[in-house]
Image (cartoon, rainbow, N blue to C red; front, side, top):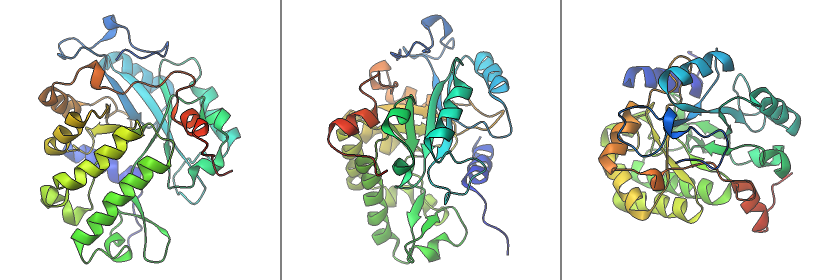
Length: 299
């Protein structure tokens, strides 16, 4: 039996096939904005992985493409099986030190709902942002299931896809409302058997539930060039509600910074810098807001 592919491999294959000024001192200056984009904000790809590359090689691409990069590494418990998973303060501090002084934004891709217990608020607050998605779901046996795996549909009981979709939407809302995150990535992704009927499953009512949670909790929704998601119908509802957006490629070298779909949707929506995510300043980061609200990380 063929072994399940990782999300990294899955997204890399999908991407290949599919092919603002920030308060941070690392923000791109107006002079560095890519010429001819038609936007009033500098371009940032907030969803970059360093797989099979180095930070120096990635920075060469950033300069060549005139796009600032946000680097993310997977973060959470060791139950999450990736080549690198940051699982404690020491590992996260080492990662931050590796990126120190580099002209990038520093982020993590948080895994599952228990990642917060791995880190202290003080160390998490040294990140520029935290990103996550809904592509891992609870199976019938209570275990986490990677929804892109071939046997996922049987393991999560998707016989009635409309009922499952209601659960999936609730899962989006739970993640957005119960985790100190800044960006919700791969927004509106669906399992393979459902992708052809996107509008059937992502009804306006379901979209509005996710969008309302994002607005309430100040979570930006990623416009993914790697996934070519969300579709315009979803994005129009989100923009009308006042959602902030980020651009992301989910790129691995040398595909980071390829933001064609993000730019296409940005132009269709007439996005301006007021619509775009920028990392929060000290004191306003998601984990700091979380702590002030009285909610504690489960450590």
